[in-house]
Amino acid sequence: MHDRRRGAKNRLKKLLKTLRLSPLGDGAVYAEFGDTLDLELNRSLQALAVALRARALPWIRDVVPALCGIALHFDPFHPELPAPVLEYCRALLEDCFDSAAKFEDSGRTVEVPVCYDVEFGLDLTEVSERTSFSIDEIIKRHVKTQHWVLMVGFSPGQPYIGGLDPGLAVPRRAAPRVRMPTGSVAIANAQTAVYPYETPGGWSIIGRTPLTVFDPARDPASLFAPGDRVRFIPVSRIEFEKLK
Image (cartoon, rainbow, N blue to C red; front, side, top):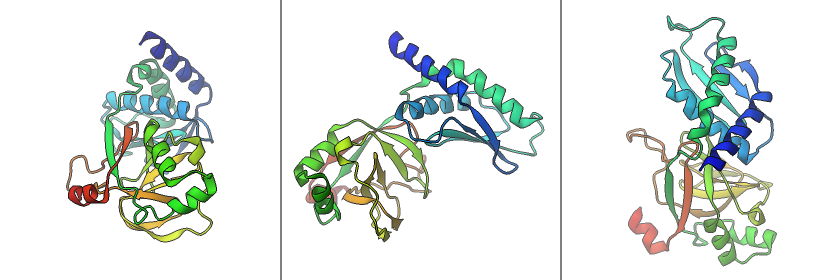
């Protein structure tokens, strides 16, 4: 435990040296720590976001972690809004670094049943040809690795999930689909995505989940949150229909 906490603190110290702040309109500040996806960096960002939320500052509306940064959304008309806000946010971030390490790996574990039937895994055959793995091997590799949510975006509730087996890191499709079926589980490069709605997309579909990924009437509305660990669980077509 102490070694893990010490490692988290060291990563956070390195992050502080790369901090770049910029305004996002008149109601947000973006704290950027890099421009390429780094899984260890993202883990530290998730912890920092939790530490920021824990402050419960009345003028902050939301804290939104991204792949390489964090957006702080604030109420520009709040009477307690500090001025100048950009400089205050820098001091706030630096102060939160000290407490962020204890929040690493504090997310939930979300179990996601996936039917990898070829009727749902529309691109399984193509992924098999690209990787030289059998379909059974693709499924085995997808479910055995540790996954976690890097960020949520593109459409409400859609997770970008890291931890994909390197052997499955196929590029985006040359011709994106106009419609990705709701619940599609798709891969591209080093990530997995789960599509909450029928939207366009260029990732390779390897399966489908019967779960409702985003429901505005549910609390919380999104099945996934940044920092959550994810376990993909293979289910049969019969189990899929029962769960649906």
